[in-house]
Length: 249
Ligand code: PEP
Image 1 (cartoon, protein in one colour):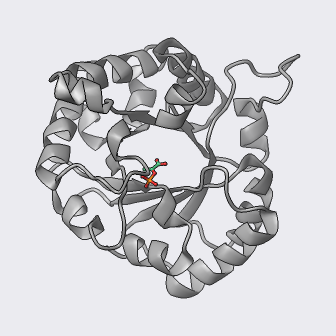
Image 2: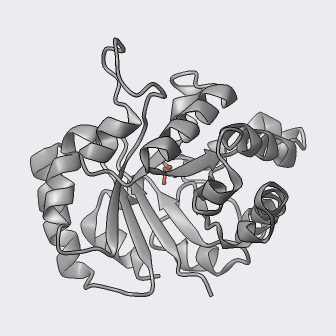
C-alpha cells in the first residue's frame, strides 16, 4: 500500500511573511503523520521562509514551481535546478499546465527541465493533462502519453521510478470542474501502463496524483479512486484549515 502524496501548488501567491504564517497555522491543524507525504510548492522567493518554518517536520517537503534547464549563466530572471536545490528545494513541478499554456512551454522544454532536475538531485513532479478541445476530440490518452514520454525522455529508468506524476486536465484547473473519480482513474491507468513500459515493474511505485479543482468536499472520493495515489491542489491549498482537511483525507 503506497502512502498518499498531497501537493500544494501555491502558484503566484503568499509572500514570505504570509507563507510563514500559513505554515504555522497549518502545523497546528496537521500534527506529524507517518503515513502520508505532504509537499508544498511556494513562490521561489518564499522558499526559505517555508523550509525554515518546516525544519522540524520531515513529513512535509518543499519544492519549486519551475526551473530553467541550464545550471547557471546569462538567463536573467530564471532559477536553475542546482540553485533551487541549494536553497532547500527537494522537488520541482515540471510541465504544469500554466507553464505550458500561459508561458508556452513545449513538451521538449519540459523534458529538458526534468532532466536538469534529476541531475541536480531534485525530484520532478511531472504534470500532464489535456485541454477541453482535446478531450472532446477523444485525444486525452494520446496527449497525456505524449507529454509523459517527452517529459521523461532525458530521465533514466531508475530516476523515473523515483519521480512523481500528476494528471491535471487543463479544463479542470482553477475552473471548479473536476474529472469524475472514474475518469481520473481511467487516465491514471493509462499513465501507469506507460510508466511500466518506461521503467518496468518499478513504474508501479511511481505516485500518480490527480489535480484540478480539488477541494475538501471532493478530495476523499478522488483519493479513493483506483490508481489515484495523491492530490495536487492549487486554489484550495491557500487556506491552512481547508488544506489540512484535504491532507487528512
Ligand atoms: C494546480 O495549480 O495544479 C491546480 C490543480 O489548481 P486548482 O486546484 O486551483 O485547480
